[in-house]
Image (cartoon, rainbow, N blue to C red):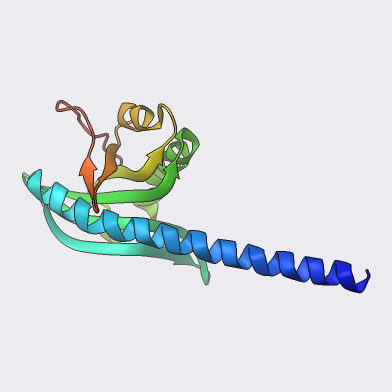
Length: 164
């Protein structure tokens, strides 16, 4: 490899690191506006949120096996709930499918919440066409941006799916 090629590959690698850093920071920003909005909205819906975890990681054998953007511990009408949220700058139906798989596995990660209902929500700055409807059809709450906060964007008669 000649000197020019070497400089090109180093510059490309540096650019890729900067892009990853920028997208990670944007993702953290989205997560940062989602969590407080979710707490307020679920409280208004009658859930009593007692704990709020941000970027909760699950470790196994010194490796991260799962990460949850927002995790709320709550109670409503005597039922305990673990409300898990996924924040996306751009949310697709594939992202929602992946998140549903994560929700199906969540019960095994949180033994301390084994008797809790698991409820999910997605929050996106942008959604692919049909993605928010797909989420609702699959029992997920949907949050959309409004100014500097997020709003709940589901039909009035919406009933969330409960995972165990």
